[in-house]
Length: 354
Ligand SMILES: Nc1ncnc2c1ncn2[C@@H]1O[C@H](COP(=O)(O)OP(=O)(O)OP(=O)(O)O)[C@@H](O)[C@H]1O
Ligand SMILES: [Mg+2]
Image 1 (cartoon, rainbow, N blue to C red):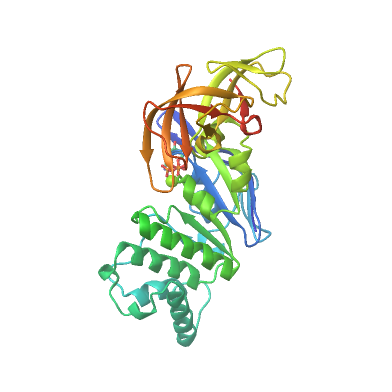
Image 2 (image 1 turned 30 degrees about the vertical axis):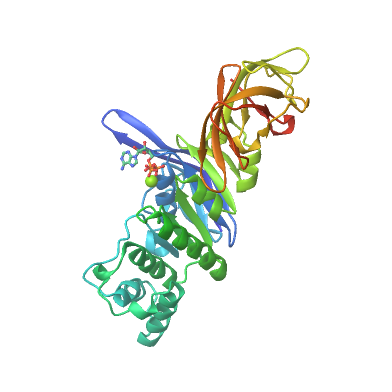
């Protein structure tokens, strides 16, 4: 549905040149919810703006619905209004001097295809019902809450019945509860409409909740592109691993027997790559196992609980093993200064070269 090939976008400021997007290739399938995830400045917005036609790339090609819309090499460029896309951005960009209805109707009345008044009305009311704002159609846009304004922006994008929807941090101005509500709404609507979505966020939880696939970006490049579960369980690099949720990292050296010598002691784990020497061993806080008495199983260490924070469904602990502090999540109850045994199951350990 969206195909991006070797995309390059360079910003020149003074004598400096920033490679904001540096050779990115992605493919968003029909009806796929595709999320770009990355730290601030990693190039997410720039990539999205290139797809939207708001930026002219310096290299590479973009096609939407198998139609070329941008090719730097062939000096070819289709303007945003010719790309058949809907857009929702971080600032709601709801027009304050208009009613809710007029906001949603605007792109329909000013778009490339002329629609009858009755058709416009039908589409607007449909879109507003969809985001549960039908009852507020006549209200001036400023008299809405932040979440409602965000939904107006969403309705406005959906009303043009795009095949492709581009969204840049559309939830970042909402409070936590509303963010979840609108997030679920976006997901449901995108599936219901069967549209392809390219969605930008720096929020890992949001990405996991929404995405069919996530591309993790850093410094203008895609580090890894995979479904959320795969990214979480099998990150291709330490950077991706750290980006998707809390991770304990333990430095060590692979010994001749294929184990890793670390500050904790010797760890048994599958050292797939024979060339690995200096490594970081990664394990997530919820993957470690706690026992009050020693079980005698491999990779088990005596530990002291340093702190224990009860968060309702689980408890987050910091534990110390041979002087090294690790974070640990459990549903068992623990108390500071308690002596316990912590096991790092071999199959959960990930090795990254240092
Ligand atoms: N108009 C511009 N002129 C010069 N440099 C720019 C411009 N827009 C973005 N950049 C630079 O390009 C890089 C990528 O920026 P971009 O806005 O794409 O990042 P982002 O991943 O969307 O970040 P954030 O999460 O903060 O929104 C950054 O280094 C940024 O400073
Ligand atoms: Mg951005």
